[in-house]
Amino acid sequence: MLTSPELIPQLFKTEYRKIVSVLCKYFGLDQVAVAEDIASDTFLTASETWGQLQDIPANPAAWLYNVAKNKARNYLQRESLFKNEIAKNIAKTEGNPTVEIDLSPQNILDSQLQMLFAICHPSISAESQVGLALRILCGFGIEEIADAFLTNKETINKRLFRAKEKLREENISIEFPPASELNHRLEAVLTTIYLLFSEGYHSASQQATIRKELCVEAMRLCFMLTENEATNLPQVNALLSLMCFHSSRFEARINAQGEMILYEEQDTSLWDEALIHEGEYFLNRAAVGSKLSRYHLEAAIAYWHTHKEDTVEKWENILQLYNQLLLIEYSPLAALNRTYAMSKARGKKEAIAEAEKLELKNNHFYFALLGELYRDVDDKIARQHYEQALTLTRTEGDRQLMQQKLASTSRY
Image (tube, rainbow, N blue to C red):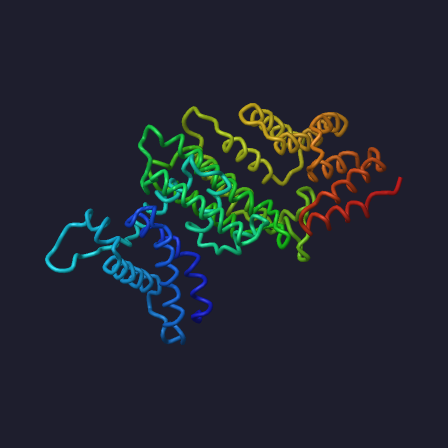
């Protein structure tokens, strides 16, 4: 059984977002700071009350919800906000009004989804959307968010403050968008989830190459979308499939020293077969309708990467999928990854010519790939590219990888 110091941080990660979402839905998004204060105060009360193991209640989550309700009720009863604004929307009763905060499972789920749409409103920048999602819906502290964005707490506080002010100015409501706007608004939500997962999977943090907790949170948010009939759409399932496939190779991407292991050198026995099957399940669910999204294509590419056999057929399929992806939505990284698939399917000479056209001079992945492509073709040029990649790397794991590549490449 967990002790109080162990249990409370775990509960904070799972329950903070639920309490904040429900309270924001009740109070209004302009009172998000109040909702966050009440939720934080609820956990402070828990840490003070659960001092000893025997003091932990049988149902800790229910205990937190009850305390949060009481704190919200007390707040409403003592603040002028209750008299001047919220009371207008609450049925009057004899004596003190009854304040009922609905923390039922269904309202918790709905409130979190509605909050997700609210913070992904088009008036908020993509960077701020991710920050708000981490803070409000994932329960991340300011310091954790600052680490994820490679900045300081003051910058994050200012960014979140400006985003909340923008939500207040735009008078954004916590609700599902109307059917006519759903697809457009859903795109912003999926982009935020995708960026959140990408930050975890390709973390720029100096402290870790992979931030698994960011990836887990992104998958959780996406799974919530699949649980709602209105948002259980093909592109949502495709994104969840993509994340399952990528996550299946977590344990094989990093060695015991925290160093990155390239795809072709991974121990495939460490791949998570259960997650691969989950990815296939959601990919099948995505295969309906006539719309082909970037998430469908990226999920299909990730699916082929879970095939352990290194065949020309595998890489030709991946190459063709990249060709389709670049037609739908061009990105330099996708174009770069395409050249690696080309080298496996059609040889290094053709791939080198394609890669050099990209001229991504400030991207260490670009030079690392050129190093790989020139390896055993012209080791002198390969070393030059590895050295350039080394000067551009941002994580310790990437630096170690480039140093290993240099050490294993012959000196002219």
